[in-house]
Amino acid sequence: MEYASFIAVVMLLLAVYSLAQAGDRRAKQTDLRLRRLERKVDLLLAHAGIAEPEDPRMAEIDQLLAQGKKIQAIKVHRAVTGSGLVEAKEEVERRMR
Image 1 (cartoon, rainbow, N blue to C red):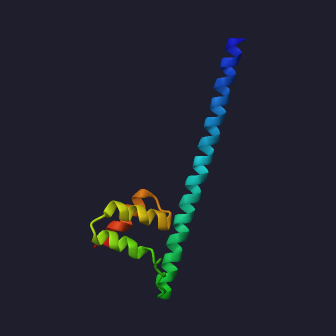
Image 2: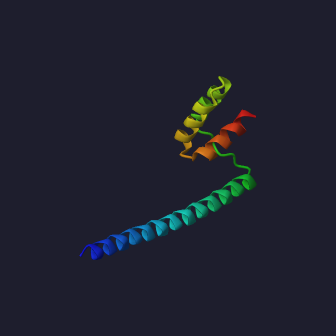
């Protein structure tokens, strides 16, 4: 009986792992598609000569950078844009220039 329980638990763990992997794959595909769409929209805006309006909260980021508070600026950028840590860091560093 213990052997059958062990097999059942292993099978259940394998099933959960498979589902997690499939979900992760779908999330990566969706993220890739979203990035491609964002690039296309950016190209269309640039081609049309339309500047994307900047969020007024970005001024707070500039103020933090002027005070030398890069980490806080990254935190605010993430809160404003919903971006990931690496993306926010790169964008804040671009604003520093």
